[in-house]
Length: 496
Image (cartoon, rainbow, N blue to C red; front, side, top):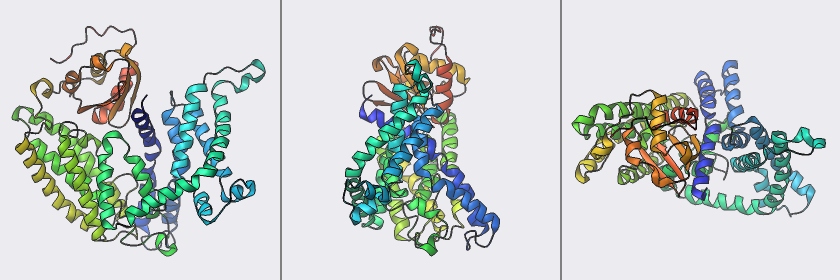
């Protein structure tokens, strides 16, 4: 697997812990709604809900360790998750400032104190998860001599991870202060640019979506990796009183996404529907309505973005630029709102009563303007340059034959178009994409994949392939795995 393909695997695994954020948002959002001024101080139920949500937010680092280890393990086994937790605890315990000082291998100056004081962070969580998963995938079937048979296989992995944690701690003891300083400098260079920095962050956030590396950028600004912690501070109880949050500033790296996800992208969806060929409008409508609603209501944008990012890359760059403009405007006007999962209606409602929310309703006004901008600009660009957005593709890929078929049969068709089980060494999926490892990428029939309903095909080196399917991705991946390896696919009919 090449480096980019490996990062894709990590990015997919990151969705496991990130998926816990909606629970925190719901609990804390309802708590703030009940007691918007006391943050639980004036209402027992509000305090109960806020503290319950904080239990998730405050422990995101260890959740990353557990979730990444689980998500990257071959068979998604709990032993890998346990190993991720063990590795994280070893590293964070050994690199606690007091422990580092007691060990005495490095001189602990003020910068070192600050660095090791924040060793409990998402980066270490992700690193612990990766190490645990790699050890699990390599050693979970190892058989030890009979005297040590109890520790064979999966039981061996947490033990190996603890030793690996010791080794990593030794290395990090010397390099972590420099790494931390670099991250702080990077974050400071962006935040120092004020609203321009917010705009640049929004632009690059969207540009990294196709390769799944936007999570790495998000972790710098949303979490406590470089001292910014915009998302974490937003949901911190008593943030204003303790100085953790500032009204009109905290949320600056989240607020500008609301106008884009709730309004801008649905405007783009409407433009793509209106510019589709007449014979394809019904098919395009079903795609755009579902994807547009997901973007508006939940802030899940991938089904919509992947519907055009590979068909019309220039439009996607334009979308990234408009996202940057939105974050710039929201920051400049000090309009703030935050989210626990993504910038959809649910999170906007939940965050509205957060004491840090500042003129959040103006983001709706801004969003209505962006709906018009997206619609006009997308429609004009599509018609002016003849862009092949959904419903405007060439005839050999325009017919979405798989739109209404039973998923079991559709999975067999996808499997056949990919060369069958004999051509696939790994089948996986995230929320919107099949993630595949192939023996021979040249025998994959891309036109057939698109005819079956795929929104795009991403090649990551000679052996890694992603097929963008939208919400069906995980279901299709499961059905593909259920097709027996020896089943004859010659009778499976494919669209012409």
